[in-house]
Amino acid sequence: MTQCRGSSMNRPAPLPPARKREAFSGGRRHGFRPAAAGIVRYLPAGRLRMSEMFELAAGKTRGPVSRSYWIVEGRLAAGAYPDPRGAGNRAGGLLDAGFDLFINLTEDLPGGGDDHLSRYDGRAAERGAIVHRFPVADMDIPTEALMERILDGIDRGLDEGRRVYVHCWGGLGRTGVVVGCWLVRHGHARGKDFEGILDGLRLGDREGGRRESPQTPAQFRMMRGWPQRSPAKSGTTRQDRFRGCLLGLAAGDALGTTLEFRSPGTFEAIDDMVGGGPFRLRAGEWTDDTSMALCLAASLTECGGFDARDQMERYVRWFREGYFSSTGRCFDIGNTTADALMRFERSGDPVAGSTDPRSAGNGSLMRLAPAAMFYAGHTAAAVAMAGESSRTTHGAEEAIDACRYFAALLVRALNGESKQRLLAADTAADLALSPAIAQVAAGSFKKREPPEIQGSGYVVKALEAALWAFHRGQDFRSGALLAVNLGDDADTTGAIYGQIAGAHYGADGIPAAWRQRLAMRDEIESLADRLLAGPDSG
Image 1 (tube, one colour):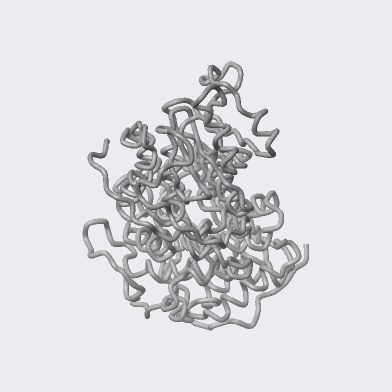
Image 2 (cartoon, one colour):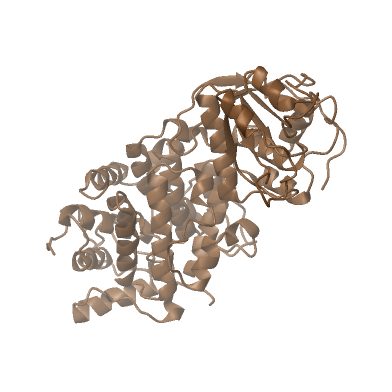
């Protein structure tokens, strides 16, 4: 493997490094409100491109057929099953009205829970219409991954100029939760207002519009918890995502240093990047998380690939000389990292991380982004190299697996995958993970709240906290503040959050004032561009 030496970006400092401790321990609605007409902008779902603007149907606008209602008049409607039989032939009425895409949520296949229904596929095909099936059991909810596919299918049809009809059997439970999530996705997510909008739209169903929809508590929870599309994603370029990933790491680090080592309940929450903290930093100065990430980025780009020895030599230069430090000296280094670097100095073996399970700190996860960025064109390589990058300083199984899982997420975010799809429980289906990391990957962060969610130095808790903030936040800023206001190892929780959120929202999604304050911002952006231009970045 090519050997290379550190760049000239050295900031000498004879001061001994200050060390940090990597501590861890192993309903129903009542009443109806009128719908207010609003503008809905179709934002990208994954790689979809949707730029048309539509107005929601006015309240009480009669649906196109019986037991139906308009969502976007003339384009998108929902309601009961389009039975092709008899005088109430809803299928024929919809086809006559120009509907050419049906989103069928029933189990009307042989043996399914709705197999008593009369199929309308043949009649639709004769008229050139398409039927997309997304079977969901009656009174149940789709998986998150399936809901994402359903919503993408609706948006794709609208983008193609189709007239779309969404239905289950009665048009209440399954249909209601899909329509509700669609409204949330496209911006009607302020408080519970979108439920009033849904109620108003459904008044267009003169026969059943005053019945409860959705029908079950689980359906309401899914609808209320569905994330809104971020406007930042609509124009995010690949370069912007790469810069966002590295700048986001630094921004989260600099934001969180103010509250580092502060226990929950002992401080007032912050709402801006103000500096200070235990190391009395200026606003925009960052700690060990970013220093080590920049060392890793420089190694990958200057060596043209993964060189564990070169990485460790750069980490030692930071440790001893202040290389890639925001202040010119090493500070805030974790015990596990410091022990590994001194072990490397003695032995020359770059795989110096302790394998003791009790050493599973977050020190390798906090710096991970460059490995995923450099290998973003090859997910398997990114996952493998993420694990190897951890072994240099953190060899515990949970630390390695946290890096492997997070690298898979970062690659998908860098490649523009939607937030909901990123956080789906099956994202890590192909990865063999230790039990605690597998639990996080399965979505533990969606089910817990503080104090169960902790900004701890333990890698499992740190990963869970960062993903909790990403899941809960509506944009980079709100999620970052959720992450760092957990306290404790706040800078590292912020840095881990910043990697995934920055890749998702892009550099332009990070508050401009925060970006402008960041120490060495130009060098960080330059390294991000070099990682993007690397031979394995795609």
